[in-house]
Length: 176
Length: 134
Image (tube, rainbow over the protein chains, first blue to last red):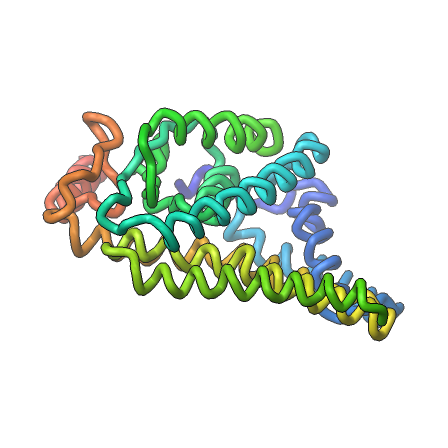
């Protein structure tokens, strides 16, 4: 493992050393401005200071530089996830209020995965957990399967199909 | 602030409160630990979301300022809620692995990462040590 994480400074370019994670910098700046709830010169200065120093200090914990491809797909994915959260909320609320608890078919489903990067896996697990009715519980030791617990599910194939076609397909286009 | 905005804000609060109620009711009604874990995900998404949208609308209609703190609350909740659920599920798997027989195996030669038992861990460790000593 030690060989893969190179710490020699001469092998990194100027940008790689001072902006190891550009997207983290952008989101930290936006986050700080949103926390202050106003955009002024002083706020912008502190935001830039935080956005540049924090990624440099934490870059040794996060050696690979992750690139976001297809920014439009990010937008598409967010809209789809929001829509699914709304629909699933109503379904699960109906289930909780009116269905006999002994009739609820809770079960585990093992979803085979194609994405490999830890950022993409984290995003997929978070999306599955945020949608009511499904909770991502564990990964297999080789990160090839995601264990999902479903509140009420008739056939496992429809869930695997929706996770793969709705979320994973788009995540694969954004992260590798 | 006209009555249209008041009605819109009231609608958002009622919808949010309804889903928070359903989330709490689910905790009471659902039979098993893992199914009870599903209930709070409704409160954190549409429940809190509805109240926060109402708060943003209220500030916008009454004071004329756009507040982004509410979106930050949603953002932080969306980041932390899956982690909590994930850790609770992992704790369940650790304590109940012998009882829950419906748990599928991922593939014949792998297992869920939290269920790797101590024997195989120490075995692989000793293999690694013996490989290093060669």
